[in-house]
Length: 121
Image (tube, rainbow, N blue to C red):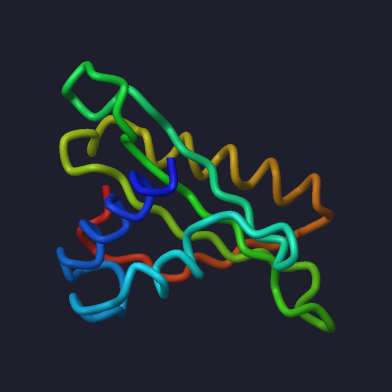
């Protein structure tokens, strides 16, 4: 559900402690970063049902980006957003583990996290 992914990304942006976008970032710009795109070798993984509501809503999202190639062709880039009610339960770690496995299947031997802040747990 692309709308749910963008909604969760917007929550992470508006919290202001993990991503560099301003609150006024457009949905189009968020979509270019968070939504899957085969041409750009970007995959998006989601976790549902662990947002604390018991409703099966989107609880977390991870985006795996290919690098630009060349000398950095072995490196993938990851970004995560976890719903506030689903935090501190290991969901981000599980999403990360899945993304690392997928990056390995792509032949990547290195991972770059776009931003890691002190409040991540």
